[in-house]
Image (cartoon, rainbow, N blue to C red; front, top):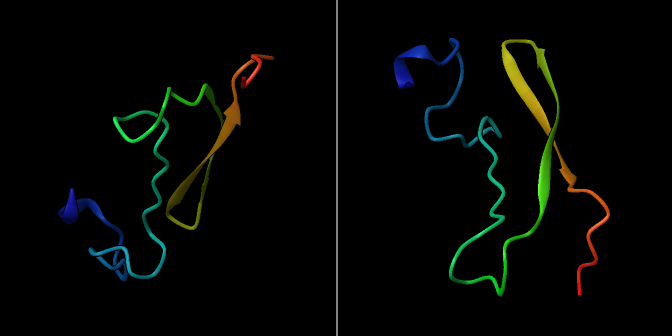
Length: 59
């Protein structure tokens, strides 16, 4: 993966190249219901929206 990064990208993500979102795991009482939104490619980077899934009641 690192060899596929665009020139000038920080492989450690120190300039905001990488973002994560935790939606499930042992530290959460239950998974957060999400859906993937629009994916946009701009300036050699990809951006993806994370949206709440459906009309589920959070309680």
